[in-house]
Amino acid sequence: MYKKSLKITKIDDPTTGKLSFGLENGNFQQSTGFDLLTDQIIIRLFTKKGSNAFQEDVGSGLYDLLGRGYNPTKIDLIKSEFINIFSDVENQIKTEQLTEDLLPTEILSSIEIKKIEYNQATTSWEILVLVSTEAGLTKEITLG
Figure (cartoon, helix red, strand yellow):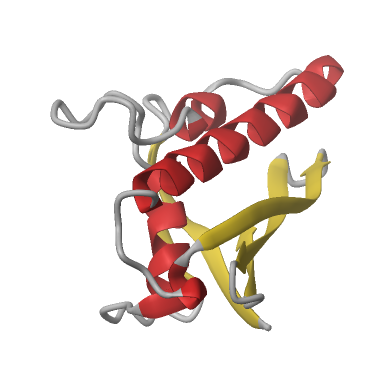
């Protein structure tokens, strides 16, 4: 199983919520095959839905969710919003793949959320998802 971790590298502007993200190992390379699929998932997660005038349905509400203040009494509601975001991204990619000629190693089978936890001490979220292809390949993606 492959792993890919995305970390917030810095908060650029706490008043607007602008964040910088980077791969944990810092290596950015041109992706192909299964790596390209997982990179597409990450890109869609961090693309604000509606920000591309040519593809207004592409992206997610993750930035909006991360930009809101956290109310400890609404943790379960926020968790359900994360689930909805991942489900939407999964559906976007699966719909797009219907019109593409791909190998089974490149076709998304599922995005399964393995863990969603809020750490009140560090006021941060840790999300672990398992990406699976039609060929049975899997990769963990950690957001936190």
